[in-house]
Image 1 (cartoon, rainbow, N blue to C red):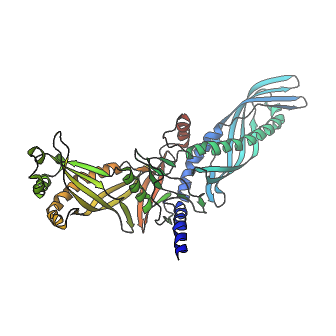
Image 2 (image 1 turned 45 degrees about the horizontal axis):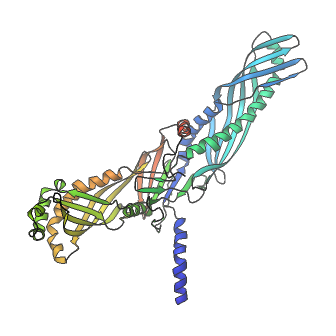
Image 3 (image 1 turned 120 degrees about the horizontal axis):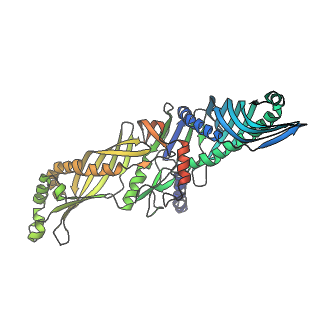
Length: 491
């Protein structure tokens, strides 16, 4: 029996740690509706990339016919038919079919003794492009395009010759169009591969993975596994853990249920477990910042009178300059608050100490008493832009003395004025702090709109549509313009 107990003592903590490391506190689902929206922005990006096609100069000939072409430029693109879809094992497939690319270039032609220069307009018809993108997490836990395949073909190439030798050029133009078709076809896939593996990955680099939230805590959004892709959606599992910046190894174990997302109607869904919020409260508590001081001028007048009356016995033996000094209340959370998410409500349980001081001028503070306060707060969780915010309100509270049951009875008259103080002074301070929010793990330039919040047992699911506040091109240019990392917690 003793050996079994020793075995459990040694192994159980390791098993708990291993289990919690793989339990996501944050899940994100992208649906086919969201993918269709992303496709429109992606198509604009592909058009911009194809407009920058660089085709090398070409020269050749047959018999007495010699030619060279240079300064090839894309003048028009028609990408009217395209699709972006999920495919298990491949993640994303992007198709462009029956597209056309119009070109212009300079010609130099020699036929027998005739020499001519000028411009040529050409068009590639029946352009087909198929790309497959494989998504995976990298060593830092960031989502990346880690593999990309591309196939491109051109059905036919036509050239419009002008000038005095147009009839001759038209007969011999197949030499030019065949060469141009080959070169154009060879340039499409390398261009798109660079766009995906380099440029689009730079957009994914803007997703927060492990970064500071403020001066006290940070957030870890590292992926726990590769994305799970079905025909209808892409699901990502994130750690979703906050940590104290002064001691990043002191974190709360994740023993909460994992979010479950079943919805498909919105473009994107974010699932957050109780642990997501509890780890934030734990980190703030460890950082020692869950405290508020209220001076006498901010107190309701009846509260100040009641406090002096209640603790008259404590002050009657003090010096007048101390007994008549201004009062101060110090609220400090004594243990990490806990979020409780139920199908019909989200509440926060808080236990705090309230210390009552006299603050004489040029003298040390004089503590009159200390009491314990238990509060239940209602919490409303929502996303604004791409920042997750929480707004709280006071549901109920009770106070009792740390000294004796008799003193607890004497505190009953303080209930009502303290409640007024909490509602009018303390809660606005708390909501002003929580209004700063924390970013959800989506790329820069992408925001939430029309969100809906659904409560479940142990987690919430926030659904919403997407809005591009910046184009992919703007995000890429901003990323490349930044010469230094924004945070000391770089990845």
